[in-house]
Amino acid sequence: MPMGVELPTVMLAAARIGAVHSVVFGGFSPAALAGRLAIARAAVMVTCDGVGRGGKWIDLKGVADEAVAICATEHGHTVRTQVVVASGRTGGPPVPMTPGRDVWWDDALRGHPDTCEVVWVDAEDPLFCLFTSGSTGAPKGIVHTVGGYMVGSATTFKYSFNYQTGDVFFCTADCGWITGHTYVTYGPLLNRATQVIFEGIPTYPDAGRLWAIVAKYGVTAIYTAPTALRSLKRSGDAFVTAHDRSSLKILGSVGEPINPEAWDWYHTVVGNRRAAVVDSYWQTETGAHVVAPLPVAGLDLKPGAAQLPHLGIVPALLDDGGNVVEGEGSGHLVLAAPWPSALRTLMGDHARMEATYFTRFPGYYMTGDGARRDADGHLWLTGRTDDVLNVSGHLLGTAEVESAIVGVAGIAEAAVVGVPHEVTGQAVYAFVVLMPGVVGSDALRAAIAAGVRSRIGPIARIETMHWVGARGLPKTRSGKILRRLLRKIAGGGGGGGPRRRVHPRRPGGAGRLAGGVRQVKGGHRGAARDRIRRVVVAPAGALWGGFQSGSAMRRMRAGWCGALGAVSLFGCGFRFVSFRDCAARNPFVLLSWTGGVCVFLSRLGTLGCVSR
Image 1: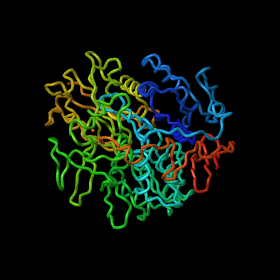
Image 2: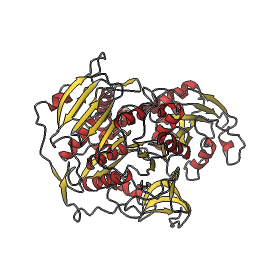
Image 3: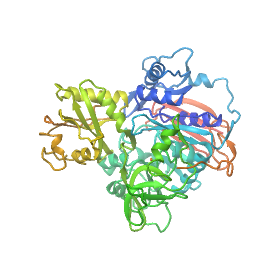
Image 4: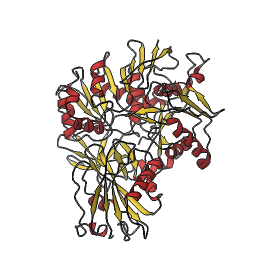
């Protein structure tokens, strides 16, 4: 679903009746969506007929229909009902609806009361399942529970962003990711916050869109990703300075470590050196912030550092042998004590959860990230230590991408690694072993790009391809790919700058892969296009031991937004008042609980108003 008011509405409605929701980002392919539907054993899917994004139309209903078909034929699971939200688009082809399964959103609501009874559940009952990529290729269905998750989302929102009555919060994240769950749907509402919900992309219709929204609605705290900031920085300061940003007090960063240059631009140009930068570190698994500098007087902010653990979080650094690193030093970042919003299991695979997060370092939760502690005791994140890529804040499993590449005819084997990129943080660098007699070409490059896009979606774009000859990939005696060597060969040169060539006799074994290298540069023109910018041709050759549900909240309402004062759209006296056409150039959702009004402007020209 797109980021319209219906998305958090569905999430909160599911919570109110005790149903488990699982939101999937709209950029995934039908095959990827089908796998997630099957793992979650989804009974009802809510989608939209489509959405415009960056001036392009995305057929969400078509993706959903294909995913449901794949789910039935390849996974043996049937989705019983599909509720379709009408975008209001005119002039397009008729939307195909399957009788007995598909129903329009308005038809589904018609004849039902504005409220329904709350279903009581245990604090440890599941609230939602959210999928994230794993290094084995199969997506991991992270399960969060009602009580602990809401405690974590409510407290971290309040203190990380220093939220006060009358403030306006603006998070640009999609609810298909954990940030959209915790800091769009649950955290703000649990604090009765007024917020802006964002639909679309920050650079459309121009690079000043975010700052125009900040000025128009008096936003006091904005929360966005370093990828977006780097892109906006490249567009020039004029798009920022053209709009009033004097209301801003907090500048939040999420999804990946923010590089010092982007941090400084964010603080200096966007915040006029007045707003505090909150560089937050956390994961889908942690549910809420675990490391972030609270915006308090006396704390010297450090560009690029997440700095200090959040309330109740006990981090530690371990060396490869599991020994605690004291004082200054680097190591594996682990969590040494339980926290309320921790994941409880993986959907349908608890053994995998234990193996992934608790086996390598018994007694600790393994984040899969490395970190450095400086002389002040502040933490600096250094990147993933497992086989997971972080592209624009989206985690991609290396095995998942490699499997998609190998699925293309003529490919014998593949390995992918991440390299630094000035916009996306990390980019995908693929080493591709060709079948005997197959020659690397632009046509094969395009076929691989199409195959990866079909299997995973446009978020899995390959920045560079490296054709590998008959000798294959470097491996250990046990057959494991030497990814450290591949990273060294890839060179760490990000997009936008020159990449060093790989010399056939370069120390470190690079000559095993490259007997001569040439680079072919291509375009970089949007998510829907082929994103392979360079082709390199080488012709020669991760707890919590159990939430104490009996001690703190034995029972609670599934849709409670109660003790901490949040409001659920369904069942708390809210009703749709009117819908009418409008010409909204800047789509957004403004949720204002203090004023008692929720206004939704859709880029597709629909205005909805929800009031008490």
